[in-house]
Length: 515
Image (cartoon, rainbow, N blue to C red; front, side, top):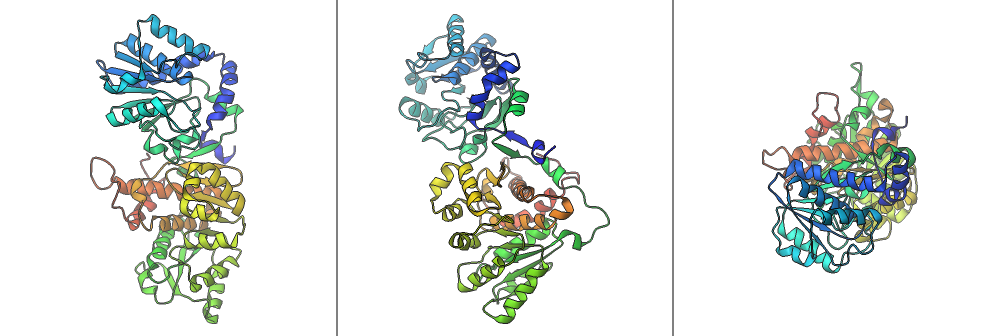
C-alpha cells in the first residue's frame, strides 16, 4: 500500500461530475436516488442543529443543486418545519429529469415558490443555500449576487448544499461574492476547492455525505489532491527507541540573519531543535551572534564569505551538516549574495525560504533535493506573476512552481499546499493568528529539523514537507486556543509562542489528544 492511501482523498468537481453517473450505476443507484440521498443528508444536518419550530428558507437556483434544495424543502416540510422556498422566475424551465421530479413533489405537497426578490424581507430562522453547485465557473451577477449579499448581511445560520454558492469548487476562490455558510454538506467526494484560498472564510463546518458512492469513486478515480490530518502524524512520527543519541537525528545548518533580522535565524534554529534535530548550527552576519545565542543550544557563527577564512569555514560546515535551511533574515546585500552562492554550490538537501527565494528567482535553477516554502508574494516573484494570479488558482500555481524549480513546493496560505512531481496535499490546520512576523521562519526550521531525521524515520522528501506544514499549523491552533477565551484568538500570537507546541505535535504517540 502506498503512503497516500492513509490520507484523505480530495477530488475536483469535474472528476465527480464525470464519474458520478457510472459510479451510481455500478452501485445499483439511480440519479434520482442520489438526489434524494443528498436532500436527506442536508436535512439530517438541519435536524441535528435546528429544532422544530423553525422557519427554514430554501433558496434554489437552476440545475441539480436547486433540485437538491427542493428535496430538502419537501422533507423538512413533511417533518414539521415551516418552509418557504425562493427561486428566480424561470429557474426550473431547463432542468434535469431528477430536478423536475423534485419540483413536482414539492408542489404536490402543497409547496409554493416565491421569487428571489421577496427573500430579503422574508422571515426566516435558518437558510438552506441551493443556488449554485460546484459547476459554477464565472462571476456571480444580477439577482443571484444581490441574493447572496442579502444572505450574508442577515447573518442567519446557513446550510450550504454541496458548496457555498459563489465559491469555485476547484480553486476555492469566491467568484465575486459567495455565501458565508455555517455548515457545508458536500456529496460523493470532498472537493479540493473547499480547503484552500477563500474557502475557509465561507464553508463553516464541513460535513461529508458519500451518498453510497465513496468506494466506487475512490476505486475508479485518481484523487486530485490529499488532505493532511493530524492523525497522519502517528504513522509518520513513531516513538524513538530508548537507545538513541543526537548523531542519529541529523545536523541542521541555518543560514541568514543579517543585521536587524537575526531573530529570524534564531526562530528557525530553535524550531529545528524543537522538531527533533540532533544539533543545529546558525550562520549569521558578523556582529549579530549575541542576538542568536539567547538559545544556548544553538551553535552560532558570524561569517562573511568575502573573507577567505570565513568562506573556508562555511565550506567546512557545509561538508558536515545533513540539511541546510537558507533564507530567514538573509536580506539582499552583497553579504547575503555571498552566502547564497556558497550554499548553492553544496549538494546538501536545502529548505529555501524568504530572501533566498528572491535569489532563486534571479538564478532560475532547478533541483530535486530542495523544499521551497514561498508565500503568495514570493511565488509571484518566482513565476514572474502577481499575487492575485497566484491566488486565483493555487493548485496550478503550486504545480507551475514545482515544474519550474523542481523539488517539493510548499505554497503557504490558508490551505497550504505541498506539491511534488507526482502529488499535492492540502493542510487546513492553522490559524489566522499565524499571520505574524517570524512564523514562516519557524516553518522553515521545523521542516529542516524533520528532514534531518528523515533517514531515521524512513520519510520521503514530500512527507517531510507535509509533516513540517502540519506540525506548524497544529502548533498555531494550539497557541490560538491557549488564551482561555471563548473562541480561538486571531491576533497577537508571536512566532516564539509556537515552540513548546512543536514538541507536542512532533510526539504524536505520547498521549496527545488529536483534533
